[in-house]
Length: 135
Image (tube, rainbow, N blue to C red):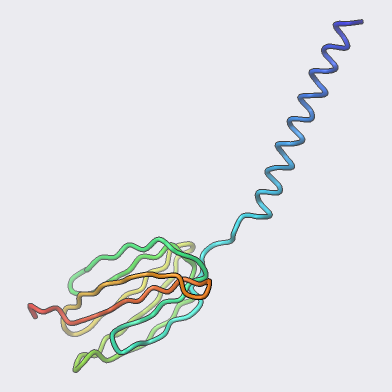
């Protein structure tokens, strides 16, 4: 009789632990933030301002004179053209699931800097472009 009570007690506490774990996982799923999203693109005299709902991870590279930013965020496809002095720069936003790329192409090689900062509860990345000085 005592052994059976002990076994039932362990089964009861094990069930409580399992139930608590499942409820905790459900609450965690409900309160987890969604994916980061690109909200707006603004053309500036010096490049682009990219507005996100939260801070994304950004990695940039220069490929054959074109500047490409890889951003861990969702985005809708967009494109445009801006003028830097006498140089026209074409820009394009592409998305592949949770990763988006922002590419800048011009007739002359480009170099650029980007810097992010929190503004009014959103995250802004300013991409400052210039023709490569050795061109």
